[in-house]
Length: 279
Image (cartoon, rainbow, N blue to C red; front, top):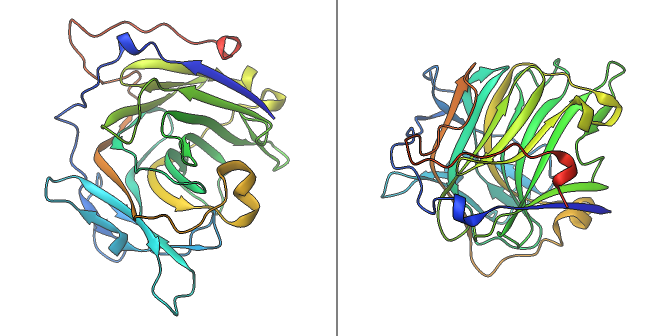
């Protein structure tokens, strides 16, 4: 398995999170919801056979942040673990998706995801852009892109896990909140962390040169892997403490390109990152 690393220039990053990020307006799927609201998932997790999404595992903290809670399910539950996931009601095909979050103190076998995913999950060709904190290490984050060929074959930026793209953050994402953004255009995707470009990819970086996009929603989730995913994330066992992720804000900006982090005269100018620069 080949690993590609990119180290962030820590001097170019602000260690404080934006204080005026949008507040999440939370709803359950059975409720009428606002066009810019956020919906709490309430079904068996598709990516892991050991996990159930529950609205009760998405909770509002005293400080106004939203928390996702991963814990063992009560005895007699259909699946052994429960956690929280939220998705945006608003969708976009191109634009910028952003999340200001503090990761949990992670554990082997856990995944904390910030990502876009196809809006019509039943009929639409697969399209997905990911930030993923995988396993116990919160000083690195994985980038990935999922797309689908005309014949229905799914292809990924990381070549089905054989060519991982990993960002060495230069900080511990579990200690403070940071802002992660993905800009998607008709031709490319740009990944930002705290306003700094950490990855830029196009069809030339995808297997077969594929670049198919479509309507997407924003997602934030925290989950535990099933046994067949352990080679990627580690072996999941009960952690010593409940895993809790904090969401300070999230936004979908259809048709708007570039980071909105720390906009002002003193914002550092980031240079595009070529895939060949990832070492």
